[in-house]
Image (cartoon, rainbow, N blue to C red; front, side):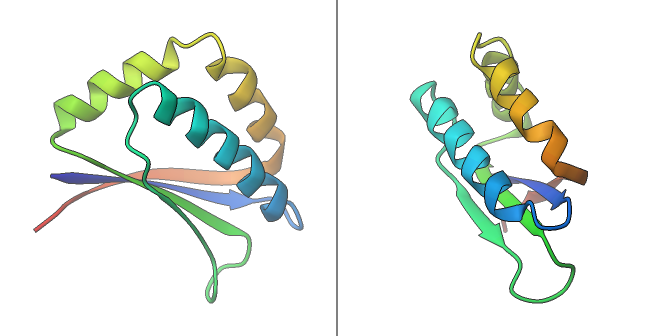
Length: 97
């Protein structure tokens, strides 16, 4: 089992709007087979940090699902709404032990 962790650094004051848009995207992706996962926001540390975590059985399962959702016609317009709100971001993967 692996965890995909998308870490977003929102622009100053834009975290709430980014969370709203991420939740819209999560609904779109879950409807298309993506695992539901969870959305985390900062309580301490770097401000305006949003993390979206999802679990997959393997990296190949993740890659297959990623390729599927990237091809959805709704994906591009949703992603374009996020871009102006993001200062930086990373994608991290972890093994579940």
